[in-house]
Image: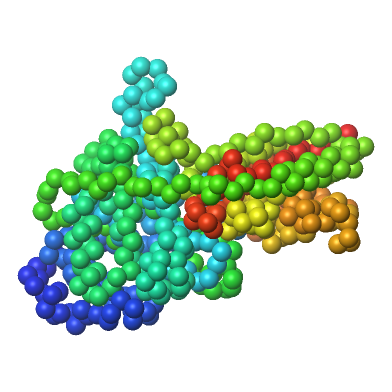
Length: 473
């Protein structure tokens, strides 16, 4: 809804609303509404404000007829603004407009982050298509580094990433320098210093910004949560998100003063994982293939690393499926259809959290029809799995030290007799999340945030996992 545009010549500086505010360090989560109201009042002389609800959608929503999701992690809820009444939560933006999030950050968890995206683009000539072929393509490509729990300035600390849970913060997403400066100044007037910037790369792509025709891009943000300390606290956060999502439109028309293109973090800290871990991984693979060889035919799958270079999807008119600069993604198995309930995937890899190359890792089983996860496991579930699969029970075993940093497991509809196995669920009458036997199955991997660099690790510094399909003979 559009809010009133009363003109307050010097109302904010004079403190007419009575909330020129506590000092930044003393703002607390209970004052979210007070902060939002103060900000809206402060911008009113120059900007119209439109408010959108912010919602976390359930995994079950991906299983509605005809719906596809961007390969969601079932262990990581995703939230977006309800700009449109569908899963396509995006809006066109004028070049001097801004999207602003004022929120209480999530409760303690391994990861949360907010990422800006270009959602769709119209192409008068689609790249790679016959001459004269036009159309709109869904891109869902990130436009800046994610602001996550190690980057955000919050009221909990003047140091980004310190005391970043359950604190107030604000994020301004815009392509325009004047807009950012004016909005940030309103927060300063409120004595609120926990302001964060997401720069839209107006010249870097370049972006097509405007609101008066279908030829303009659409934009959105996405918030990810993963692996909470207290699952109930996270669910409460999801049920009633303490997030105000606002669109700011200048009342006076002016030309853009484009912000510089974002400066991206560089993956890789120069330290590769130990070669001994690769030797151990391959030795464990050989042992397990021998173990299963009498009953199963094994086929190794090719890992598909899907982390993209900046703006490649908008350039080529392809879908980035919600890429995130904080993560390496791999899609390791496409269109696998097991012939029996005992057919299985075998996955063997290095626990990158143990080697210091990740904050968390996870493997997900995917419903390929709906492009959504059904089950996932992370480093805690995987801990000790290689020892179990190898049958190592004694710390005096010479393999113990290296195998402790590995993981190994199978995934199947029927896990009978398997020492470490992830059950692939089938949908039921009360729960649509699953994969009906006979439908296609995928598997994906995530490695999130190397602690040293505060972004994704470099693939070249990792010993990647190996994936096999095992088909009953």
